[in-house]
Length: 476
Ligand SMILES: [Zn+2]
Image (cartoon, rainbow, N blue to C red; front, top):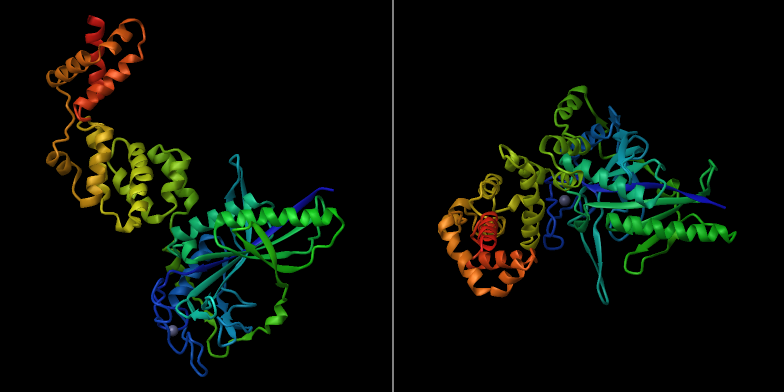
């Protein structure tokens, strides 16, 4: 029998706010453990939470971007459970009245087709603390506790690990473009749980679903789903039952294992949070937030392809970060070769940034400076190879391209008089290559060309060198 997978994803996103969801503590990542804490986020008895309005606005903006219905009235609920990273024994979340309901995210499938994935809801809650396990003890860092966390739940519309991958990629692009979150998975800013069940092809009813947790990368989600689909299919084909449970993904072994049998909503004894007022969203507020709507990633990708003549792939790399896209657009402005600018940004610039562990915001080279460098190459004043040298210098010292070229005397030699000398020297020193060329091995000219470039320390204009060489070799 043929089976098909039914997959739904729950994505948790840490919102990019300065302070936590219900107190004034900083949300800064990477501080010493338990330094951004107060009685509220430590869960002391008797404290009162105060709602972070910016987090509510960011959730509404997300809802507008994915076409949700934004609730004019929603409320907070307590989700009760005991766990060491949640000392007040409940998490403030939203249960039956979330901020956003319904919505759609369009994904791109292999081969270029698109598919619309339904969104069930997006609600706001607080993140929990983080546990660390040492050799003989465990510790809890409360810096993360209380960070605004948005949960986006998809409909079970996904049918394969590749579709789940495409969905997460599209959602991440949307969230980044709206400044909702940086979605840095290494910092745990975007986390994902997945529900997956199998059913015979053609059957409407869902099979028993399994929840998978602990997938830390988008590609990890794809691998975990592929494993789980195979495991469940094998069980069903043997006539075994798949039990409803929560499983943990182990990225190192590439397997899932049982964590616990599935809990149900009533296990959490949800009830309205008595310490917080319901959230009332006015039409004015929605109109105000609507003004912040960014150009959506897919529209931006298409615009980059059209406006700058870029391949889809390049456009995708550039729009993956709002600041990178803005950097590119500033550099490409007024350039005669926006494709060349894209090449420089996506290879040299991103390479150097990765090497220096810097973000695009910290890039020492300004967009206008990169633009100048590319036009120096375009106009033939320096070669592409020298350009890379100049770029390294610019990156190290923040200097303008023309200044580096001038200081280091790197201007390309395009004057035939000086090139003649180098060509003569290369011909005199390499009689064998000359003979080869004249005997009909036309490729031998490339070696000679390389020699001339070497003699000129890379500064000779390669095209002119080719022409002069050819003239001298053919002329006798
Ligand atoms: Zn706090």
